[in-house]
Length: 577
Image (cartoon, rainbow, N blue to C red; front, side, top):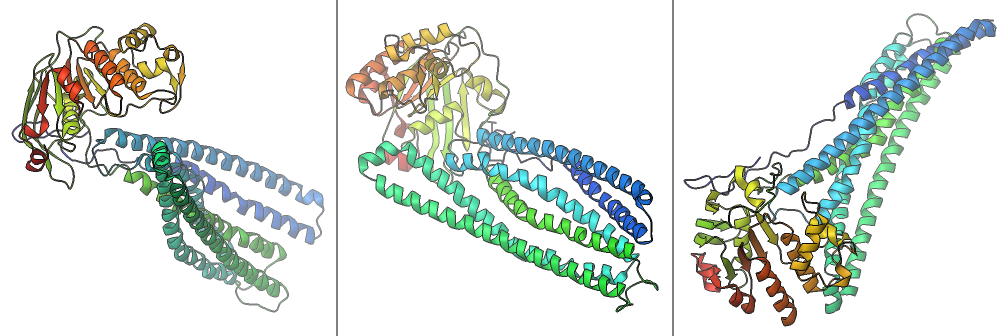
């Protein structure tokens, strides 16, 4: 877990990389792959029995002489099929578990990261990596790993079985075998690059589409819908071209593999045929091959290239899987992480605490990655139960200061104390349990009004939801009863209703006595803003309230007004203030 560090005290969040690396190879996959490869070796026994049966028939035997060979052939076939089924099932279970763990680690890395981290990927790109690209790991684990083990085990055994009969036939196979991996290597490098470009384009298009859908109303107001559609069409065309490029490379590698394997098998067949005709007498160990021995060699020659063929077909699955792993690994490269983000939830008190908390900030220093300092040595004290309005020019640091108080922004140095307790790794989860946060754009989830207020928090009953709606001024709104469904993003809600719904969420938390609100009246008309202010001030009685706002009417009614640009902020922000 990340830890805190401060100049002289343990307060500032360090920028160590969180220990949320993807898990290693899935347990159980090697056993499944070895079982599949071992089951393939049983074909040697089946080929020997089939060749022996043909030899017995050529020598004048009848069906009674080969019935036991046919029985053994069927038994080996049943054992082979059962072994492959068991191994594939074990591989599938291990692969599904591995993909789930990788997704969980990626979600954990995103949950641990600070929302102020500029390296944090876009929502659409992260969703594409976790949802779509992670599925590319399954073909890699289910097809490539067994094929790799079959190449490592089956090929040497087949060569040893053939070299005992004809060293020339074995030499042909050994000479042709490196040509296939060489072609796969040359084509595979390009395949991996093409897969990475394809996945990158897919993630970029998903991120672009999600961003434009979120701002669709703004695009309509600006008349930019057609321009956005043209750009989306260009992204889709680029993705189509990259997809076709990956498919062309896949077909090229398959054609190269079939060419080399067909030529090698044909050379073996020609050699064996001329040897049986007596035209070629070299390549054997001092005697002529029998028909059964020649048939055994011919049955094993295609089986020699079958693992290579499977490996070539799965090579692109490996390239796509590695590209997906790199995309998921990018989600782990978060340099800023939240204190106590993954701690177990603390037990929430059933009744409010003894009193609202104080907020003390000493010598705070904060800056964004690659930017100038927002605060250099800021000091701020807020009394228990005090209502404070943070004002200042845009970019002065109002929202940043709220995030520092909530522990959402990793500071460079300085201390933040809530109710006298230092905000650090061990106390962050406990202190956050008594905080309530309302951002500039409260999100409304697809579900009922009651679900959006309760947010599945333990201890929030239906009565609590109804009481919270009344406190937020929504008790008389007919279409906002607890059972009424809402669409994703709050479709059908006005701006004021969305803000009041967010206030109802925090009203349903009686233990939350430190309220942090960011621009609660932004983009509201004067009448709606006045009603929201009345509800907010009524609900916030007996609680410590900190509001970042540009609304002069809200700041005047709150009482204490703090200009963020004059709390020892960085020079640039002070000039802006």
